[in-house]
Image (cartoon, rainbow over all chains, first blue to last red; front, side, top):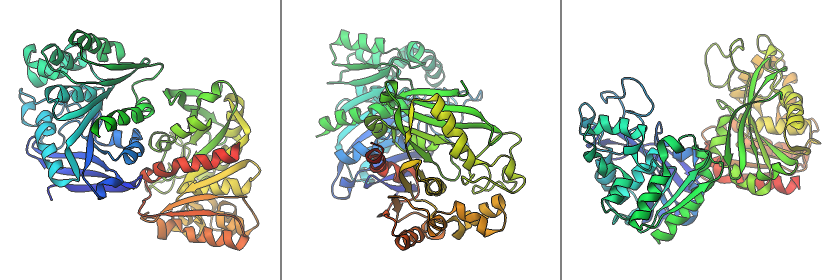
Length: 280
Length: 280
């Protein structure tokens, strides 16, 4: 098939697999990890996508979040894609910074050279990868949810706001609420998308809501001891955008939690239940 | 205090901390990670030690096993020590192999040069570290359990068999049942302890049982798809030793599971309940 299996382990009665495929969009091999619950041996199951944050690969969520237990109970497939194109011939950040290039694709289709050739994470996640997954894996693509962390929280929110009919459920951990209004986002968008900020709005959750996009509901957890809270994440901007648009937002400020996977692990069960209830 | 905090995160209402201290036994800085459940803010709590396998540090169990959820519910402290001395001036394996030297202390006190200066993992774990933990952390040292994985399963079994009065509960994931009878153990013991196999018996779970050591009970999980099962782990030797000694052993062969933390994560809750029931 079009998917290579890099590794596979049995886990909570299901299987945890790392896949690799040659992506036409990013013009390089891309990896993603899939937890298939025991139910997937008998029937097509709903899927929850998890988009990861800066520096991550498909592995971080898979080994650190402890998500498989509840996903196995509730019959959810989990898919965690890598966060950027990678490999020989793919340009990274010449400065080697952690917040641009490899591990920092920001879920956009870059329009600026040299990034525009490979950095097509939006098209990979909106078209190529779901097409491949729908053909090759035992998944019911009529029942999809999406969540993410930090840069991946931004990714989950913007994918869902642009295509609300695809996702029955959306949630995020410590998302970048408005990349147009923080240094991480401004740096990445300037390089990937160019200086015209109007072109950035389709990649900014708050701008999408201001411009009319809506979700029927949204769960966000944010740790109050998160070191990126004030300068980068700014949940108050999402709160204001949702309030102005009368869009339902469940924003939980979790006292004393930081930006790590120890925070995610503590609340992943709540999120998976949120998705399971909406995915039927 | 005698402990430096390397990092700390809130997790399941408790705290996950990496500590460092200057060890007199190993003559280098040693790290260990501690999960303190919420109960530890009010009272001294029981502790379960987790000894890790080859190549691991204090981090692997901490981020991959998903143990904190149940430990938080049951009020258990979890302590995961590093697996060897490390750092400048500490000899590693000149050949750079994964199964000797750094990350491969085998929980022995080495008697052979050049290892004998630093590789004193037995004394660190039997005396120095419990002393430090008992003085500095909110732990009830009258209620201790121990478990481990692979090389660390061997470590847990041998520590407990040598000092059964210290540990009210013992369990293991895919332990090396008899290091005297596998190539991992023979290589390490020859170098750390010298060629006289009589000196190895105090570090071999099966030999300790043959020589009269007993535990009131023991839970072992072993995946049937574990790549190290036949050549290194040999649970059948432990089974035979326990049967000959009429020592109760609950050995569960878990169909299709491998040697990874995906296996551990699936059964850690069972193990923590086993410990919690015996630690009161």
